Length: 147
Length: 220
Image (tube, rainbow over all chains, first blue to last red; front, top):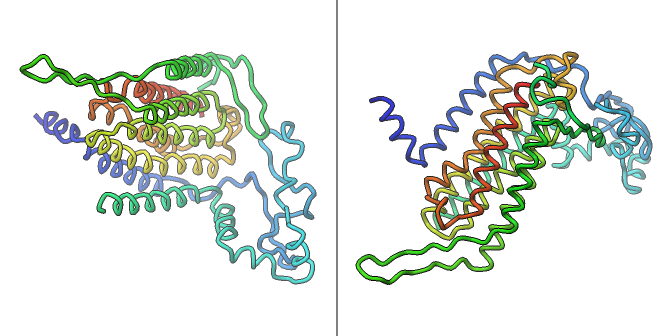
């Protein structure tokens, strides 16, 4: 009897989305309460803060166009890993050499903010970004179907 | 659980930068299945729907326009390539990327049919597939945060910390959402003429990503 009622609800495909969203929400609440909060110490991209650097807090270590330290999973496969992470255009290189505020300028940009979020959340921003995309899609599709 | 007891000993491990692609008996057989069905999608011609007028001997044959045929074939082939990638990859993040690409292609296959009923189902499926990316990528991010690596080869060795059970559950739930296309296709009665034969790619890719995620979850 109860199975009949459940199957009648699920057979309407417009009910699948709320059910799925409910399952995801429940699982996320369980994840937030059950996961250990400290992160794994040995991350792929080590970072040090150097307040004297003009690129602070964007400093990734090492001079531009040369190699910086990245903890590779398979270092033997990527002999050139880290060469591009501290890339600066000639203009940025000039700014970094003449002022002390290039790093804060970079961080004030949307891209720089996203990059800092990416770094400090160890990749959890992928969740935030997909959520933003999803909300944008939901709003656009609502407006499209309404009109 | 040991990798060798589950998917077989890898024949060959392709070293590709900071990631590995590995060919074990399990992944290779799933890859070949995806390859064969992609070839079918390349060669197949669309079915024509025939409506018989009741009470007479007249019937209407619905034509599929060349433009619609091209789009559906392209989506089916793209879906085939995405599932081939998801079968072989040895990196959790690439795996989730390929899975979400499979989901997007499935939305395209379902939505290409110009029929109000089918388009409503495709809309609902699109929302589920999009919201499934949140637990999917969330699981990948949490795996990176709790173990410090995304490589399946590193994760199945006992040197890294164990992946929490709830993170595996998030990964499976994300794949479930992306692979829900056959349900909507069946509800919109697409397996008969309107979507055939490209809609087979929906079912096959969903089956393949379910099979692969079982292996991934048991191994890591």
